[in-house]
Length: 114
Length: 112
Image (cartoon, rainbow over all chains, first blue to last red; front, side, top):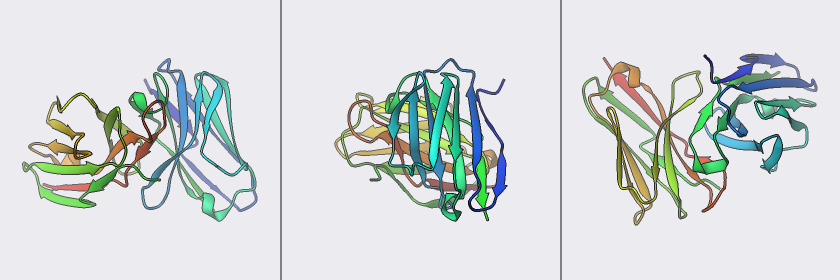
């Protein structure tokens, strides 16, 4: 059984478009995250949600809007895509918040903006 | 700002040899975590070591933590080709309930 799943795995789109990435975890965790990994493999947190509530927003442009309909799902919507948004986006979850517990990552969504 | 820094950036060894990777960090922490990332995949949690622990084992993995030097090491013994991956250390940004900050990783290549 997949613990943290993301769709789609690959996303190729043009500048200016709007796209969404979906994430689901079946681990019963309370906390979920979105990370961005750039071409140099640097992984940086974007958002953190605890039981559907936004806890962390790491000065991400407001073109990025996360939504958590329930604690098992955390989706990421991106408006007006830019070339610099090209990266791999990872969803993750943990039992409780932030850095105190191990995190479980999804397989990633490779976003390419042309 | 970046918290953890892995060293070396890349490491190439023969199968059966041991691989050691190091991580240095800047602020006080309550735990340090190591993750593995295979090419094109998500990160997989390996070990979490708490600040009151000095050493932890999991199978062929051994992690040490020296809080006085603000450093940790990950040792993989008897390496296999399947260990080829990037290895990241991660620490909470500050003390308390703060997000994990990941280093840039060590790229390990194990040659059969």
